[in-house]
Amino acid sequence: MEGQTQPKSRSNSIVAALSWFRDLAFSVLLAVILIVFIYQPVKVEGTSMMPALTDQERIFINKFTYRFGTGNIERDDLVVFWFPLDRSKSYIKRIIGLPGDTVQVNKGIVYVNGKKLDEPYVPPDYRDDQSHLPVTVPPNNYFVLGDHRSSSNDSRAWGTVDRKYIYGKAVFVYWPLDKMGPLK
Image 1 (cartoon, helix red, strand yellow):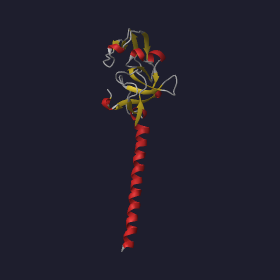
Image 2 (tube, one colour):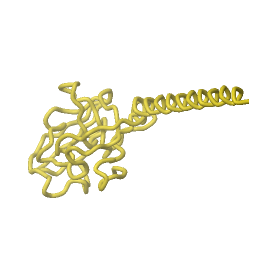
Image 3 (cartoon, rainbow, N blue to C red):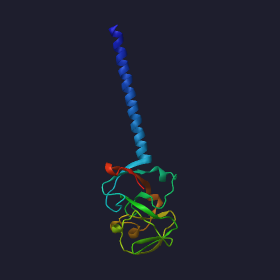
Image 4 (cartoon, one colour):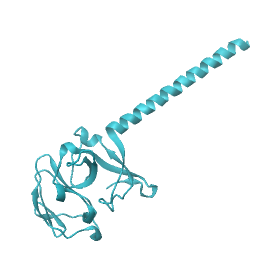
């Protein structure tokens, strides 16, 4: 009788191990699909998006919404894109001007199509008093600005961002824990 129980026990252990490896492989595959196609963790570097995002924060970006054309890029979206002058670098900025919009900055105040833009996300201390000539945003391009205007390298310096370089929308802060939550 002892001889019969041992093979059955060994057989159960092999089935359990195979089941565990199957579940692990499925979990890894699911994680890879999520990271490659849908959500990607990103570390914020720099202060140009303060106070919305601070240096060294960790966020998730949604790559699916823009990659497959299921979501429109809208004004105020926080987008991640390949820097147009050096595609080895990624930037994160806020969408200010959409294709066809005319954007002008007059003494730090942003106007879109002649109307002052309401920007509650830019605290008075983070504004600058610079002026820039009007720019009409070309088709398939976007005018982007950092929220910390006095320390942001953005469309005011290097122009608009082509749609093909935008690869994600910032959606969620996951680190540090005290700032965890969805981005607005």
